[in-house]
Length: 251
Length: 251
DNA sequence: ACATCCTGTTCTCTAAACCAGAACGTTTAT
DNA sequence: ATAAACGTTCTGGTTTAGAGAACAGGATGT
Image (tube, rainbow over all chains, first blue to last red; front, side):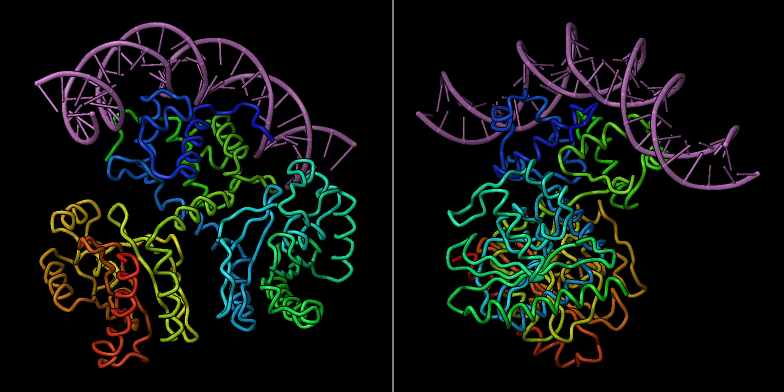
């Protein structure tokens, strides 16, 4: 939703921050050109951000500082789901030897809260804070399957159904069918949809009210996950981890 | 350094963000009172931040969103030191079974880039992004000992020598003596200075130019760390980890 | 059931301040 | 040596931020 009375100056500052994030360290002139804002304005905004620790100047270039990590880390630490699930996701990674993840939904996108690597884990370029479309991952499908249908439609309206690969879900009917399956089985599967040769299995974490809080997953190369694993051994482990988290959250 | 021509509107936004971080979810009126800014201004800033994903509204309250984790995670991932040191710090934690940390200096303070827990690790409330005074931890001392003296003085001038515990370093002479020792030995020790009964050992990570990039540490309860461990076995492991990181960074 | 007191939100108008553009000092490149 | 490009400072005109008042909605207490 757009702000009714947006603060334009703040929006300019946020634009600068996002540009610095995408482009990495920049000079004043470069930012001025890219954003079509005068040099003096860019300079004023950057020095203001700098004096508050959000931006640093090194070697004549401005870049984002670790203040964002401080705030982000603080927010994450204040989330009950994270605090409770963190040890379970780590155990899951250690036991399976694979990559385990924790995702929550925010503003219609999935946000990875953490990932834990087991000894043999594949090295995907996911990281804490990364955003992803919900319909393209097992984690996201586990969440979507447990949201009210109205909310799911809202999300699709807003975020669309971008196809990451030819195997991706492309239509609403297809999605709703898949989500029905997920609800029935209790867990979601991604068999090479996001990345060829990668199999993921995810289970939702729900509050006692039924509201979905997030999802836990394990990702592994297809070479190490037989069909049997994917539909028996792995679901058992992931569901069990999700269940432990639910119990600890709901007391 | 203060901005010459600060953007006051941006400063107001940043004030709101910091207040939301410290106080947690808040209503408009509460923020308006706390910061002595009119309700309409607070409302305009919050909805602007909301429309860009930095702030969320739930149950009639505003709170910070995971956008900060996204930006912070992105910044961290773009740091070569983190990418190279992360596996080493995890190994260190796994091998010792204790808590291993990675710290960098920013604006005169230490910032934890990560922590890794071994099987028996104590559970300190450090987290990625947390800031700390440099003179009160082994990690910070390892860094200070390898900064130019002028920079160390700058930092002390700016950040002071706050005493966390009676054992903390309280004077400049004391600090300089300790830093001389650290330089001589090649590693820094914290024997209960930050927390009674906690022993930490930290080694600096330096670029080939000699510039210090950060520090790696292991923290363990005194009951599990004999004097012998503290001065022989542990230094060997931590220094070795730091050395591997240095080699990988400097090719 | 009603009245009162909270909220959060919208609106207007004026004082505030943001910022384009020009000018300056400094560094880098030719 | 000269030029070009950069970051920084300055000022005035114009945008706009925001105090305060008013409104709507919900909660609370009587």
